[in-house]
Length: 137
Image (tube, rainbow, N blue to C red):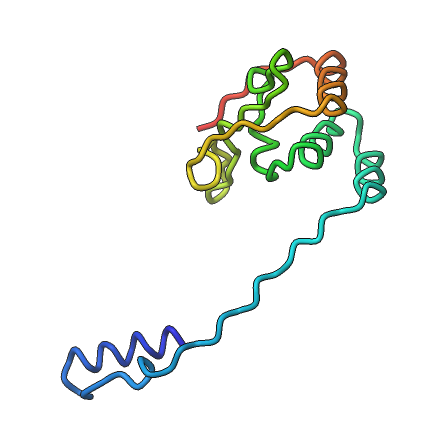
């Protein structure tokens, strides 16, 4: 519908037709898809199936509500264990065939409360798999 309307707008501009008939019709809105959160059992099953090195991804995603790119962009310095808060400062995005750091969705950094259960899992993960520097374009 958008392509047809754009073509007809060009015809109006060129003086070929007097008005765009698509302007009289409101396209129907697509219904908003409802997000169905995973159950605790589903999260546990996925976490258990991951290699130990990657289980913190499931912990941060499910326990903090982070998006996939935000989980991949999370750094040790973003986790404030003392004040029980996680600072979401960046995400990893794929542009073409390259990965790059980018601001979070909408360019909005935010702070998320850090539940004790997630803090314990993340601290155990950091102890078992110390952080290494990563540089992306």
